[in-house]
Every structure is written in structure tokens, then in C-alpha cells.
Picture (tube, rainbow, N blue to C red):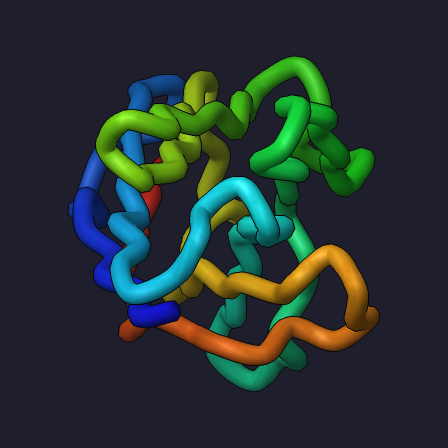
Length: 118
């Protein structure tokens, strides 16, 4: 599967952004799709994921209630709606994919920068 991420930008604290990750080349429903982020000087961290077969979602605690991951199977696209953004959400965001039969993410899209100014 190949991934193409888009939708980053610069916003003020409290505003919203939506990231998109378009997948191609494999059966979308056989994958978990996830969003990760990496802030300067920090390790890449998990943000959210979705099981494409049934839509089951997972979130890191710091984004629960503010971020929503969703999918459009017809478009083979996963979205990350980010509301009430905070300065600490500033990072490069990456989408990743892994087959449901493996543990580690196997494929990554290019990063997209999200900058939140307070």
C-alpha cells in the first residue's frame, strides 16, 4: 500500500484542521491506518488509529475528545479531524498502515506539518 498525506497548515490555538491520508495499491479493509506525530526533539508518538474493516478507533489520551479519526472506504482515505488545537499539537504528522496480521506499522506516508500558535 502507498500513502499520501495532506492537509497540514498553520492555525491559531482553538482552531481546527483536517488531515487526509489516501491509500492505494492494496485492499484498504485489510489494514489498520494510523496517525502519528513527531515534534522537534521528540520521538514519534501514536495519535490515533482505525481498523478499516469495522471502523474501530483508538486514541492517545491527550487527543481524546478533540481529534476524530474516520475513513471513507470508497475513497480509500482516512481522515484526522483535529479540533480545539493546542500549541502542544504542533508537530509533523504522519499516516501509517499495517496489515491486521502484524503489530508494527509497515508503510508510511510523507509527513505534513501542523503548527499551532498560541
